[in-house]
Structures are given as structure tokens and as C-alpha cells.
Amino acid sequence: MRSVDAEMAPQGLGRPITVEQGSFPETVWSEQVAWIDKIPRVVAMAGLLLTVLLIWWAVHHFEIVSRIILPSPAEVGSDIILVGRNILTGNYMLAALWMTTKEVLWGFGFAIAIGFSLGVLVGETSFGERAVLPYLVAIDTMPKVAFAPLFLAWLGFGIASKVALAAFIATFPIVVGTAAGLHAADENARMLFRTLGASRWQTLVRMKIPTGLPQIFTGLKIGAVGVMAGAITAEFLGGGKGFGELIRVAASQLQTPRVFSLILYLSVLGFLLFWSVVLIERKLVFWHRASVTGVDDRR
Amino acid sequence: MMQNAKPLAEQTVGHHLARPVYQLRNVSKSYAFGKIRALDPVDLDLREGSFSSVIGPSGCGKSTLLKIMAGVTPPSGGSVILDGKPVLGARREIGMMYQQATLFPWMTVLDNVLLPISIRDGKAAAKARHNDAQALLELVGLKGFEKVYPRQLSGGMAQRTSICRMLITEPQVLLLDEPFSALDELARDFMNIELQRICLSQNATAFLITHSIPEAVLLSDDVYIMSPRPGTFLEVVRIELPRPRTLEMMTTATFGEYVRYIRSRLDEGGVTA
Ligand SMILES: Nc1ncnc2c1ncn2[C@@H]1O[C@H](COP(=O)(O)OP(=O)(O)O)[C@@H](O)[C@H]1O
Ligand SMILES: [Mg+2]
Image (cartoon, rainbow over all chains, first blue to last red; front, side, top):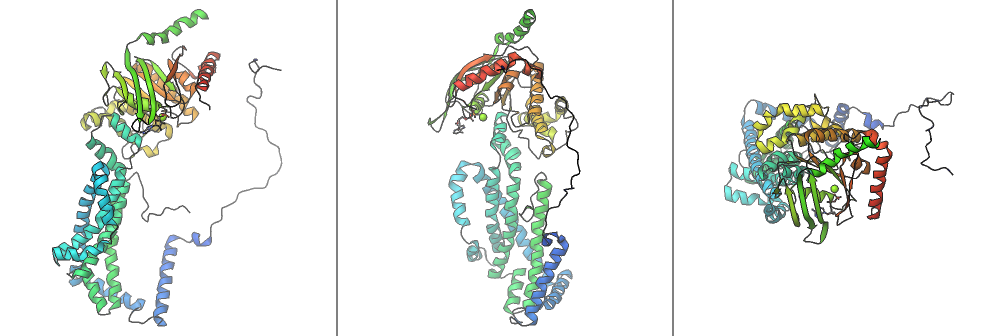
């Protein structure tokens, strides 16, 4: 038996690589992708739209539902042009759109200010988390549009009640996003700031808020959707001079093509608001690219 | 041969005569109102310019000990003295590093390095130290990466950046919690040699937590062996290998003896790999 410690010159150093000679078949292969996933994006989206329009047209053409309820795509199309002209020539519809825009922007502004402040209170202080958060969660579980009559009673039928409901709905996701964001920093980052003797303010502003920006923006994007819903709901219930009122009047007169085209222009407003938030996020949170739809491209 | 070894050994012995920088007496810690004993009473003197390591099983309280030394966590009992003054919070003499580089993605490499200055002394002071930060980055081989954002760095580069961030404040004491254990072995060896060079050139006192016995032997003057939770020091092994240490030393018989001895002591302490 040989001791392991015995000095032994190592064998097998620096050998060239030798393999068996012979002919081998090429084994380059490709992964299977279903044909439906190979369709280019533009074609896929256009195709889907055309299909929906076709079904719509068929339902209208064969009168599967009453023509009063469902106008034809062509009727809606010509009304879209009509409404577009009205808006572009600065007619009363532009005034209505501007009114709704003002409600939405004011509502969003208040929601950001209040939501961010409450979010910091909840996310940063133990008092906020233990005393304030339970109430916020309780209110958040209520259907918030139910508060609309209350805002109308308190603030009247002018712009204030619309701004209030819009802000009210959008505040909660911003609170939650901000509070969650402030909790996102990991233990190491906190410890680093503590070892540097950073003040609470420094830790908040220079570490916790930047770390939490992705969550904060998630809250803002949900808020941007909510603020539109709030403003339109308040207009439906409280009248006024906004786009929601135009929709309500058109629907009550069974002008369904008009309802459809007004909704389309309203959604442009919502789209612009949402995308402004996304663009600011991309600029500000450049290190973290969130997908706009919230769905990543893995399957 | 023997005559040659003697003065080299004395080089390291020298540290044991130097002034104590850190002094811990009876330092202990329990969590959950005394229900979890994380650290049993520990005594420790760290002398100026010395390099000490702690090795012990997971959860034995190594990180807890380091946090107490750094003034980040209060001890449940005992006294921690740094430079003759009790540690009651964060101290400027200390530089710290952990397993994660913890760089902030919204700051460039240069701004990450300057963060400690900017937190402690303000942005103007940080700006004034631009050149120092640049020199440090050059020292660790990151010249040209000043304006790069951390997501473009490899794990090793990120850790090197975090070394610079630790060094920018010119700390007297380096507290290192498994700083390179997330790196692959090649990068880790390289970083260890770098670390030694930095410590020797700045006469810094270093205290390293590690899971690797060879790493502890390679870098340390003293290796403290810790018992399982609640941890305390079982013994200290004095490594009398000459400085500067080289990677080649790791293949020598003496080195192997140190490693074997420490492993056997850890096994006796109830630690099994
Ligand atoms: N904040 C804490 N609260 C409660 N227990 C903790 C806390 N931090 C650490 N511990 C416990 O203390 C023990 C020592 O932890 P730690 O110092 O991290 O060990 P190590 O670094 O040696 O792996 C562990 O059992 C851990 O669960
Ligand atoms: Mg640890």
C-alpha cells in the first residue's frame, strides 16, 4: 500500500486533445415556434382589429342584435370624423374635452400629492403603518364611486366634485405603491447607510425613494387609470360641461354611434395621460425598464 | 533555512505588540427579548495593522458581532471600544463591506464610490474628492469605468467598486463580512491578494468573516474559531507565514498544516461540512 503523502510526479499534464476520427452527421437544429407566434406584431394587431370589425359588421348586417343598440362600423366611422372636426375646429366638444382634461389633471395632481405624502407616512413611520394603514385598507376595499353623491352634496355640481372623486380613486394605489417602494430597499443598503451615519432624511431621499421608484410608478400608472374613471363617473352623476356629460346625453337619446366615437376620443385622453407617466418613468427610472403592459415576454 | 524563517516570522509577531485599535469585552447579543441567544460573551483585541479572521458555522453570530462592532446594532451586554472611545453608533474610522456589492443602480460607478463622502460631508466635499475616487478605481483596475452604471459591471467589478467605496473614507478599520464569497474562485484569489496589498499599504486593521479556511489562513495574522450558535470564540490560531502572502504559499506543507488544524478544531466544535 502506498501512502498518499508519498512524493509522486503527477501524470497526464499538458496532453493534446485527441478524439476518434470519423464522419459525424451535422446536428444543427432549430426550436419549434408555433405559426401563430411567428406573425409580425403589426400584422397580428391589424389582423385582430380587422377580425373584430368584421364580426361587428356581420352582427350589424344580419341584425343579430337591434340596429339601434349596435350601429354599423361605417356609421361609427363617419361619426368619429364628425366629432374629430368639431374638436379640431374648437367647437363645443373641444370645450367639453378640455373641461374633462382639467378635472383629470387636477385630480391626478391632488392624488399624487396626497398619495405620496400618505405613502411616506405609512411606509416610513411605524405610527403610519400601525395606525393609518388599517384605515386606508378598509376604505380601499369599499367601492369608491359610492362616495360620488357625497362629493356632489359637499362640493356642488361644478368642477370641484369631479376633481375630488377623481383624486379620491387615484390616491389609494399611489399610497400603496409609495409605501411598498419605501420597503423595497434591502437589508444591506439600509446597513450601508447606517454605517455611514446617514440621517433619516438622507436615507429616505437618497436611498429609499430612489429604490422604490419602480413601485411608486406602478402606483402612479394604476392611479392614472383611476383618475379617468373618477372624473367620468362624477360627470355622469353630477352633470357639468365635460365629455362624460356629452356621452350621457348621447346615450339617453339613443345616439349610439356618437357614444362610441366620444368614448374613442376619451380613451385618447386616458392613453396620453398613461403614456406621459410611462415616459417620465423611463426617463427617471432608467435603470429599471418596466414593461408597459405589466406582462414580460417570457412564455 | 531556519535562520531565514525567523526574522520573517517576527514581522507578523510585530502586530501583536502594536496598539490595540478595537477592544471588545464581554460583548453579547440576544434577540427576541432574550429568547434567541445569537452571541455569547466575546473578548477581543484587534491591534493596529493586524489582519484577523473569524471562521465558524452559519448562524453562529459572526454577522451579529460585526454589526455590533460597526455600531449598527447595540449589544445586549459588554463594551466595545474603538480608538479609546466607546462605540455608540456609526463611526468614521470604520469601512465596511458585505457579500453583496450593494451598489445603487441610479448612480455611476464614480458616484457610488463617492457616496460615503457625499452622505457624511455633503455633495461639494464629494466633488472635491473626484480625483481620489478615480485613483482608487484605477488601483483596482476599473479605470475608464467611472461613468458606467452598475448594471453593466460583472460581479467581480461590482465588488471592486464597493472596495473603493469602502476605501474612499480612508478607514482605519475594515470590517468585512464574507466580501468575496459570491465570487468565483479565480476572482476571489485575485481579490484577496488585492485586499492584502491595500491593507499593508495603508496599515489598516482588518477583521474578516469568512467561510473559507484557506482564505482565512492566506490573509490573517490571527484566525478566531467560533462555536455554533450561540457563538463565542473557542481559540485563536496565529498564522506565522511571512508577508506579503502569495497564492503560491497555499500549496506549501505549512499552509496545509494550518488548514488541517483549523478544520479539525471546527469539527470538534460541532461543525460538519
Ligand atoms: N434581527 C434578528 N432578529 C432575530 N434573530 C436574529 C436577527 N439577526 C440574526 N438573528 C439570529 O442570530 C443568529 C446569528 O445570526 P448571524 O449573526 O447572521 O450569523 P452568521 O453571520 O454567523 O451566519 C442566527 O441564528 C440568526 O437567526
Ligand atoms: Mg453572516
